[in-house]
Amino acid sequence: MRILITGGAGYIGGTVAGLLSENGNQVVVFDNLSHGRRDLLPPGVEFVEGELADRPALEGLFTSAKTQGRPFDGVLHFAALIEAGESMLHPEQFFRNNTASTLALLEAILAHGPRRLVFSSTAAVYGEPEVVPIKEDARLLPTNAYGESKLLGERMLGWMHRIHGLRSAALRYFNVAGAPEGPGGITRGEAHDPETHLIPLILDVALGRRNSICIFGDDYPTPDGTCIRDYIHVSDLAEAHLLALKALETPAAAEARLIFNLGNGQGFSVREVIESARRVTGHPIPAEVHPRRAGDPAVLVASSEKAIRELGWRPRYAQLDEILRTAWIWHQKRYARAGSFAAD
Picture 1 (cartoon, helix red, strand yellow):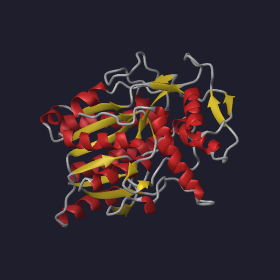
Picture 2: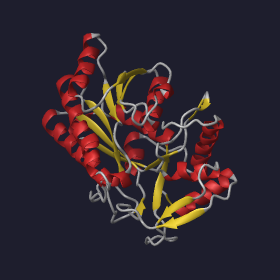
Picture 3: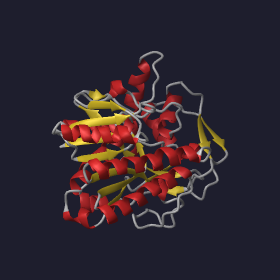
Picture 4: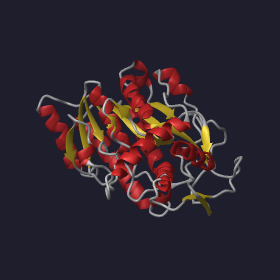
């Protein structure tokens, strides 16, 4: 197959691009490099730099592929802003980048592209869940603009399926972490500039790049007062994308759009993640408590039973220490190169 990946130069998109390429697929990455790096693209992957909001550029990409006799068989859409906290400061940026740009992509697909799309969604569409673990039919009520921007994308997919027959799978991620292990070792991991995700921040403390880790709120209605999240290894997440793409060929995808939660099904508090990192790294990792951040739900834990049942998917990295082990290997390699820092 020949697959177009938007946002494929980033952490998750690049991992999926690598897995697709390893499985014999032709991959084209479309990315503006605002949160990714071209030099970290997997070998053999074709790269096109561009903006999703540039509708003529998108249409040119699809028409050129058809003209060359190499049309795309599917699209995996990762390109988006993802920082929930930032979305509560600048919601307009998230609706422009995540929602409006997704519409531009959908219009180009309907006009010139394949009718198969895997959409990178988020557990943030649920907001404060009424029942944990969360199932796909739970109430959708985001507590931050990031989650709302993704929910609007899902709703557009519903209408495009209903009216135009577009086949799509929305994958609602929980917290993605870790680094992919392959024949060449660990060569890609999670990092952002500026960094806001918990596990990379904790590992920065272990590396001596930060003095302590901030705990935002210790008065939540959880056993230790800190937020609880479900962590999924990036390689397990990547495998689910390949399975979802294959599922779009089935009659079920013609009947209704596909929606799946992707998580480990078990939650860990912020303090438990810090303790896991202390075990894995052997460093003390001091912590400081700060006030809550706006828009942070107390508990987000997935029920992935539907993905396991219908996609045949099962996470291989079920233990938090194993996820952190791979992340720690990559972070040590990354900062062994003195002075190197770039988001990837």
